Amino acid sequence: MLILALESSAAACSAALCRDGALLAQAYQCSGLTHSRTLLPMVRDMLKNCETDLEAVDVIAVAAGPGSFTGLRIGVAAAKGLAWPGDTDCAPCSTLESMAWPLAHFQNGLIVCVMDARRSQVYNALFLGEGEGLRRLTPDRAISLEELGAELKKYENRKIVVGDGAGLCYNTLKEQVSGLELAPGHLRMQSAWGVARAAEELAARNALVKGAQLVPVYHRLSQAERERLEKESRRV
Image (cartoon, rainbow, N blue to C red; front, side):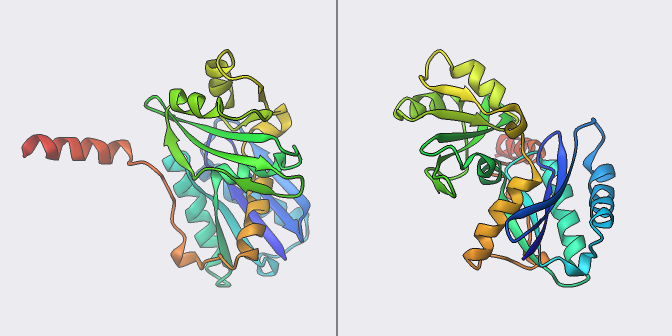
């Protein structure tokens, strides 16, 4: 199975091409440019360098959320566009699960996935590394660092923090939570390679969708939606 994976949920964006669990190529960029300028050219150049046509791809995977509202929309729109010509199957992958997969080899390690959600919250999910796989311990959620710290104190496992919010989480909770450590630098940020691994699990569960069904999963209302609801509530 040949998977083309996209990751644009945060400041960096990346694309990866994987065949039957093996990474063939990955492109990564974190230069401050908008993903709408970088993602599709990255995919085009990667496919060209791998001498692979888009028609040969079996699954197009994307980090569907949570994450930056704009970044998620760009990634999902790109995946839908790439899937449309051949009606290719798509894998809407959890951003948090995707960032946990490169750390699955930490046997019995508690993988603490964290993205900065602003407004005194983080997007978070907890996973247990099982060597060749992951065990999900919580759903994807928006949670305060105070609540997360209280929950982490219940675990005696080694705790590895990963994601673009890892530094924030570690610096805030390291004095309160024992066994907390940052993931190695080369595994800490979100990557399309992790999205491809998550897509393999969706494919194994027959949970793939068509491009028309692909939507971002925000886990929280946008600022514009919150402001609209606040205005409406004041009118009542």
